[in-house]
Length: 248
Image (tube, rainbow, N blue to C red; front, top):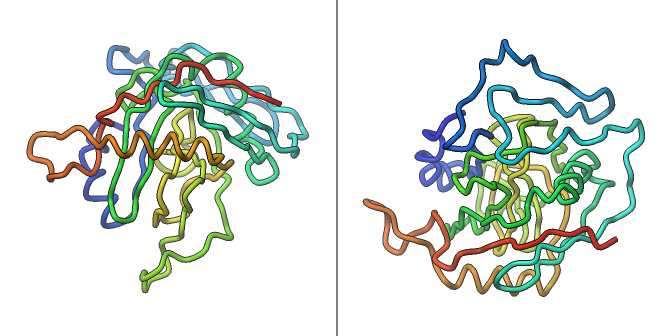
C-alpha cells in the first residue's frame, strides 16, 4: 500500500466506485522491518492482527476479541467544529468492526483529528475520516477482516449489477483491499454507487447529516491539474473531530 493508490482515486471512483484507505503508516514515521516484529493476532472470531510494517498513527493496543461479540445497538457521537454527528452502531451486522470502532473511541484515537477527504462525484458523495496523521495513510497499527453487506439494492442505471447503493446516512469502513480494515471510515452524505467491498457498520442521525451537508456545501480544495469544480480532496471547511464518545 502506498501513496500511489491515492493518485488513482479520482479515476477509480468514477470508473469502479472505489473508496480506499491507504496504508497505516503516517508520513513522518519510518517503518520497522517486519522481521523484527512479527505480526500478533488476537485469538477469537475477529482475529485483529498487528501490522508491523505499518505502525500506528497514534498508539493503541489491539482490541479485545471475546468468543462472543455483542449484538445490541450502540450509540456514539462525533463532536465536530460544525456540530455533532450522532451514530448508531450495529454489531449484529458487523460485530468485529463495531468492536474495533468502540475500542478506538475509548482509547481517544479519533479525538482531535480531521477528516481528510471529501468527494462530490455523481456516484460517490462521502466524507472520509479516522486518520490522526491527516495524510490518508494513518491507521491504528492493526487490521481485521471484512464483514461485507449482502443485501444492498442495485445502483440505478448500472447494467452490470456490480455497483450497489450505499445510501445517504450510511457509516462504513474504508480499506486498501480485502480484509485491510483499520481506523478509517466514511460517512455517506449522498447516495453512492460502490461495489459492495466496504463494511457497513452503522448509520448517521438527522443532526449528523445536517452537519455533513454543511461540510459538503463548503466544497473541496482544488488541486493542480484537477477538475473545476474539484470533486475529490480535502474539504474547504476543515472538518475537525474534537471528541468521539460512546453514549450507550
